[in-house]
Amino acid sequence: MKKIASLFGLLLFLVPIVASILPGEVSARPAPYQIATPGQLIEAVNNLRISYGLPPLAVHQILMQTAQSQADYMAATGNVTHARPGGITYTQQLLSLGFPLAGDLSLGGFRAENILYSSGPLDWSGVPPGWQDELHMNTMLSQNFTHIGAGISQSGDSYYYAVDTAAATGSGQMQDNASAMLTSVPGGGEASGVSQYMIPVTVSTARPDGSVYHKVQYGQSLWSIAIAYGTTIKNIQALNNLGDDLVVYQGQELLVQQSATAPAPSVSEATVTPQTTPTIASTSTASPTPTLLSSTSTPTSEEAEAAQSSPVSSRALVVVLIVAAFVGAGVAVWLIRDPRSE
Image (cartoon, rainbow, N blue to C red; front, side, top):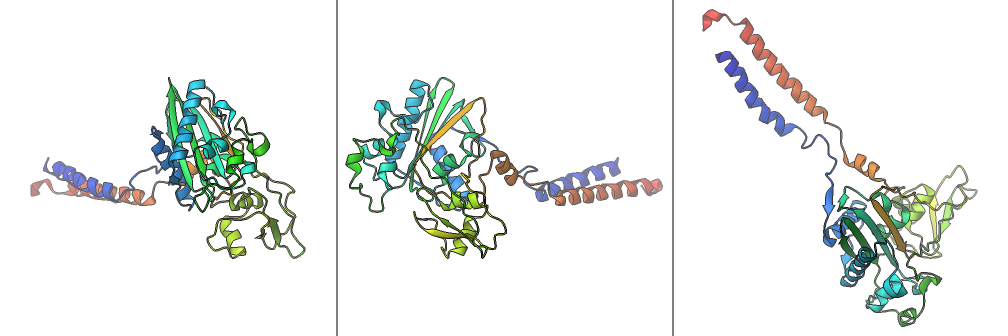
């Protein structure tokens, strides 16, 4: 019995040692958490930006107001929509509230909105499936946006979410033509709030020396250009001596590839078809705004989860073998000991 007690004591001694050197979690996949407040939704979006090397967006009270009013409007009507009460546009709403919107106001300015419906609180374990296409990712990751607001509204078991992002003018003052935009319809068709205006990226073919140049069009960004050409933002920055500058301009000619061996496809919109689920519906409206990703494609939620998970460390197997060796040795000693020695 003493031998058995000794072996049991040895096991009790080894267990905490093994636990201390095992990985913290066998699966590193982050547990989903429910988005219950606008602040949590903003934090999720800003964490996404940080994961791509982008600075977080500053909260702006006007954007908080527009996002919350849109969430309330959707909850009251039961419709997932960008339309505003009275037929005004998102741009006109921002200007009427005094937000110093940057960008070409005749095209809606630099602003975007993601909306989403969920039957129950939204479980955030990565970008929701309906927000993984280029347009929705642009709302959250555009390097030109400076501010963010969010709103959540509930109607029964239905939850309505809105994320509003926009770029303020450098001076913080309204543009000269802002008042004129309040009596017009920016974008020539945004009264319903569903304009998706953005010039798609037309991919250039290689020149005789193998270099590929791209002329930036309105609304294009380093992110969308990098996706279209199958390269990365870092590579484009390096080829054009941009340093860490993320902003590109209409008419700017960028060297995007060298030593190209085959002509590129004629046109690419660099989009990913949004995934759908029975309980979530989402849509986005965006003015042309540059965006950034540190990779060459928009990650799906499955890819993001796979990237965040890690295999069980081989160190755990080694530790288990060591423990087994200790136990086996103890048993062997106990079996071969002379009973007369006790």
